[in-house]
Amino acid sequence: MTGRRAVIADRIDRALIGSLRSTGPGTLAELMNRTGWSRPLVTAHLESLLSAGTVGVIDDQRSTGGRPARRYSLSEARRVVVGIEIDGARARVTIGDLGGRMLTDSETLGPHSRGLEQFVTILPAAVDTLLSAVRRTKVDVGAVGVGVHGHGIDRGSIERRVADVLGTTVLVDRAVNLAALEYRRGFGRLADDLIVVDVGEHIASAALSGGRPLRRAGGLAGDIAHMKSTGGTEPCCCGAAGCIESVASGAAVLRHLRRSGATVSSFDDLVRLERRGDLDTIRAVKQAGREIGDVLVTGIRLLNPSMVLLQGALVRTGGYLINGVGESLSSTSGRQASGVLLLVSDDSGRDAVLGGAVALAVDHVLSLESADATAAQPGRGGSFGRGREVERPGSVDFELDGS
Image 1 (spheres, rainbow, N blue to C red):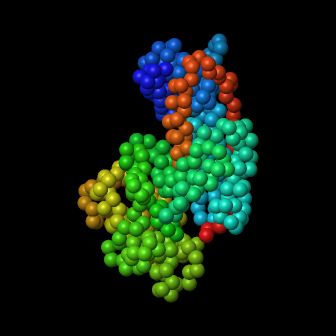
Image 2 (image 1 turned 90 degrees about the vertical axis):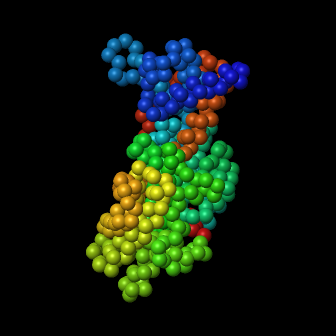
Image 3 (image 1 turned 180 degrees about the vertical axis):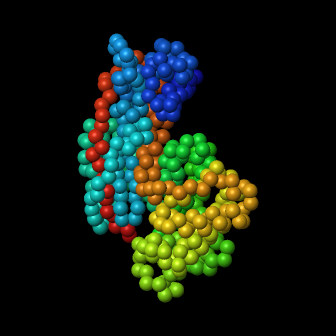
């Protein structure tokens, strides 16, 4: 295939994949109608995508007579991806299909004491178990997406070690970036320009622009954790002082309450006090929200998002933190920020990160495999026959050493 023809064919493959991803499964006739292309052209490219394992086939149960029409679907493709979330001493693993759907729920294993090294020794067996449950093997895994909580993550080490044991492409990103991707998928185009702030024991944030996470050179674009608060002087773990992380995170509020004489020994104690209506705790949490809101004003002025979404354990307690954020946005930013939609996640980002890890891997697979299908000879691909229901047997959690 010549270079020009290959480029055109690749664009057709990408358009078919894009249609199946955005609009859902479709028959040959429906895909012809969506694209405006002829039956031979659409058929040839679907067969190539089937051969590559990128598209699967299901029967159309809505048929009213005769042979049911075949419906093409990414979710029924043979290819799958692995999604991983690493949070300090814990990791969760799941299998996802090319439609971006997680095929497994979670179950817990652990604890484990040797961190990443022990994680990668047990990861292959865990992935094999999950793949067996959805009737796949490692050869069907197109890519692995990994979301890592915390600042200063060592992407290179994680990518290399996981790739070594699973034998496929591994993509690593900050957990909050992947949560933002998953929220964007849920909200649709309304969230193309979005800021997500996770406020738990620590603070992390991400920004989407045009539906894609802002990363830039250091991979930390959109992160407000180490922006300066208006008057804070508390030393920060980064070596500076007065960062939002050091004055408005759950850990910072905890330190403030201890200095004020409160009996709090853990972040869970802080959450319990707020839920019980302790006035000192409520004031401290609300002030943390004001500090976060003051910094968000700058981000809103620079990025002009359509919405700001807050998630995390401190956000989902009594609503006092979001009240503080809202006060700052309405009092200091003028019309631009006051028109931004302020939302709160209802799941603390737990499933959002894992779903985002699956989406990260799916993006990679579909980008590559449309090109792979282009190189195949049209007409040589075969269907997988009827689609089947897949059990949801459980994803796997690991306990890792936080050191």
